[in-house]
Amino acid sequence: MSELRVGFIGTGRISDLHALEYLQNPGARIVAVCDTLVELAQQRGNAWNVEPAQIYGDHREMLARAELDLVEILVPHHLHCPVMLDAAAAGVNISLQKPMALNLDDAEAMNRAADKAGIVFKVFENFVFYPPVMRAKALIDAGEIGDPLTIRIKSNSATSPDSWPIPRAAEAWRFTPEQCGGGPLVFDDGHHKFALGWHFMGQAEAVHAWIDETEREPGNILDAPAIVSWKFPGGRYGSLEVVYSRDMEIWSPYYAQDDRVEITGTRGVIEVTRGHGKLYDRPPVILYRDRQVRSFSDMPVGWEHSFILSTRHFIDALHAGQPPVLTGAEGSEVLRFALAAQQSARENRVVSL
Image (cartoon, rainbow, N blue to C red):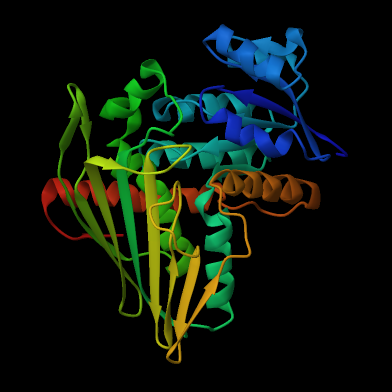
C-alpha cells in the first residue's frame, strides 16, 4: 500500500485534529467522509478535498461503496461497538476514538471481530504521543529518575475565552451516562489519564475512587471533584485529581482544561507541566536529580501535535506491518481500569483488577 485510503465516520469537532496528519502525510489520503449530519460531512469533505460522490450520511453505505484501507471512527461512545463491528465486517483497518466501549463485553466482541477479519484495530490515544510526555518517557527509560515509584496527575477544567466552540448538540451526549458510559471528566477525558498511568507504570492491580458531582449548568452534571487512586504491582502507586474550577480562566485554544503529570522515582522526579492548555509559564518538562533541576523546552507543546504524532505512528505501523498504540487488547485494559474506577466510587470500596 503506497497510499492508505482513509474514510472518516463522524466529522464533529475533534475530526479536525484527527485529519491533520492525513492531510500532509504522503502515506495516506482522506478519500471519503460520513456523518449523519450530512451538512457537517460536506463541510469537512470540502475542506479536505474529498470528491462530492464520496460524502455520505450513512456509514454502511460508505463502507459498501468506497474503496478504503482504513477508517477513523469518531462517533459517540454508545455507537463505538456497532459501527466498529460494521467496519470490521467490511475488512478495513480501524482507528477508534477512546474509550473503546461502554463495557468489557462489547470490547471483547470488537477484539474478536478484528481478529476474525484479520484487520489492524487501534484505540486512538493521543496523550501518550504528546511531545512533553514522550520526552518524559524517554528520560525515564534512560534511568534519569531511577525506578518509577508513583505517578500523580492533576486535571483541571475551567473556563476559557479562547477555547473552541462546541455545538450543544455535539456536547449533550457526553452528559448522558447511557451514551457516554460515565461522566465527561473522569470516564471520558479520564481515559487519557488512565492511559498515562498504564504508559508510565504498567497495568494497575487495584483502584479506589471518590467521584462527586458539580452542576456546570442546568442539566449538565460534571463528575468532579474526584480522586482516583491506583495500586501497581511492586508497591507502586498513582493518583488522579480531577477538579472543575467554575470561575477560573485558563488559556487553551481547545478544551478549557489543563493537565500536569509528576512521576517520582528512586533517584529523582520528573514533571510534565501542561497538556490541553497552559496554566503556568514553565518549561514543559522539568527534571530533578542529584540536587539539580534541569528543564526541557526544545519540543512542540501544542495539543494538536499529540494527534499528529499518534496518527503518524499508525500510518507508519500499517505500512511496516507493526502493531499500533493502543491495540484493541491494550485499549481493553485501560477500559477495564476506567470501569473499575466507576464501580469503586459507586460501592465505596477498593476494586481489584
